[in-house]
Image 1 (cartoon, rainbow, N blue to C red):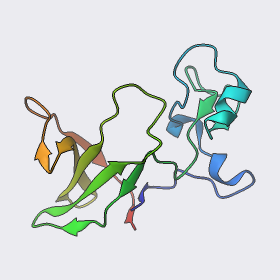
Image 2 (image 1 turned 90 degrees about the horizontal axis):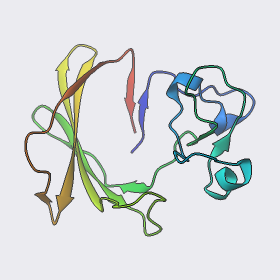
Image 3 (image 1 turned 90 degrees about the vertical axis):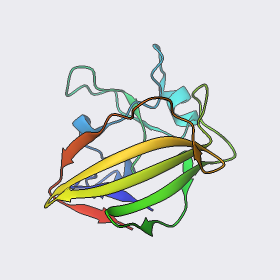
Length: 141
């Protein structure tokens, strides 16, 4: 399943690494990232700073540490489970399974809730905050 929000990726030269700066997600959050280390992680490198705080090393379009189960339509939207790939991630304390629920709130607005799972049981303590995101386009494949 790919969740594509608007036109995040420019399909011109550079392909999967041509992501507008404001949509780049840091692939190497530790200080001192080098182009070599970034490439070893399979990420994109661009040291040209266009925005303050923009990462030099960022994930390519479509990159994921998780494999997605087919989405299931629910009464209010859809849900799916993401399972961590066998290689894990470079980050500590990986969550092995995630439940991703998409609620259709109104025209152009969805609520996305992500919870940790263990054997289909929620393991996140407390109340999960919801974030609202207004979309111009939503494409779920």
